[in-house]
Amino acid sequence: MAAQLISFGILFSAILEPLVVLNTMLSNASGDASLMETLQYSGLFISIVTMIYIVLVAISNFLYKYFSKSENGIFEEIRANKIAAATITGIILIAMVIIFYTLVGKIVSEFIPYPDVPRIF
Image (cartoon, rainbow, N blue to C red):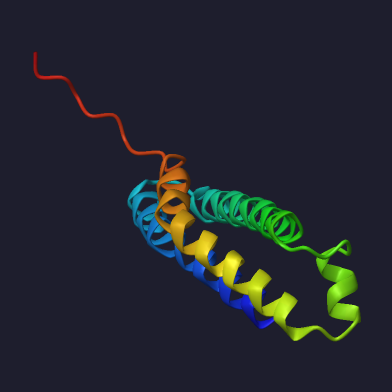
């Protein structure tokens, strides 16, 4: 459980910089819709991170079952109080989150509506 919380926190920290950039971009824009747009984009960013997190948890559970010699899945192992299974799955999850950390930031920053730059030529 602790590894899952740490993993979600690491993934969530990847969207903090794009949220700050988005808030700066939308606060410079004129109009009353900037707060609503900020909330919409924040919800989009959080949902993207949540979907990626769910996929990574599923992959880590699959990898544990694939690499272990146990016939049971991770949930049966944890019910049987086998701490090693939870530790290995947590390590796999944290390792994958560290790998995907920069990718999540880049994916989320692609949704920021930057203003159009005029062409010189």
